Amino acid sequence: MRVIAGTFKGRRLITPKGDRLVRPTADRVKESVFSILRERVVGANFLDLCAGTGSMGIEALSRGAKHVTFLERDARCIGIIERNLGICGLLAESEARHCLLRRDVVKGISDLGKRSAVFEVIYFDPPYGVGFVNGSRLYTDCLELLAEGLLLPVGGVLLVEHAKQYIVPDAVGSLRQRRQARYGDTVVSFYQKESVDV
Image (cartoon, rainbow, N blue to C red; front, side):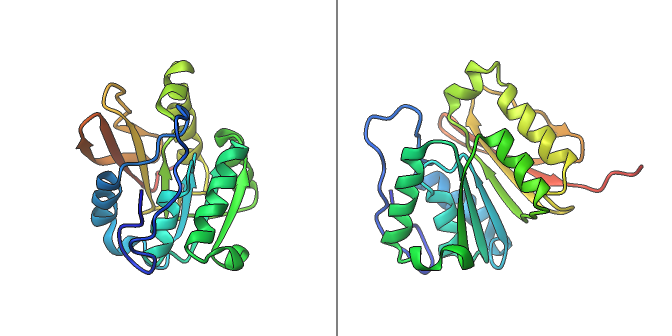
């Protein structure tokens, strides 16, 4: 696993071996996603939900994101994210360019909302098995929270990575699905936050 482009291009990131709960986004998926996002990442506040190894957030920093928040519940993954930030020389810039939050994703979204945090781009990639074990409610619960809250502003983009077997909704509240990109067994669904007339 590597950083595809930008300031840290070519840096090799650490990936845990034999851990079923951590499934880093494949390089080809990452490359395609950021090619689609293009300049939206530059100067953006980026939220990496269920961050795992931190690969997506680090790629965003490499491509010019202003700040990245890594939200991850697993302590081992937090340690891996810290090591990967160190590989890119980013640990010394902890508060200026990024922060790590150890939280369950639903609780984390709520906590960030209470802090009045705002992110122009959010990437949500829960372990596939977790979504299915919970009757796929994890996806729906998080989409509803993001649609209702102010974490994602009007015009902001939410990307949801999921298995092709799971069908995400076309719309949830103020979130509208704009496109999908398929990569073998992986699908990334792109949502945009729209204003809702009251």
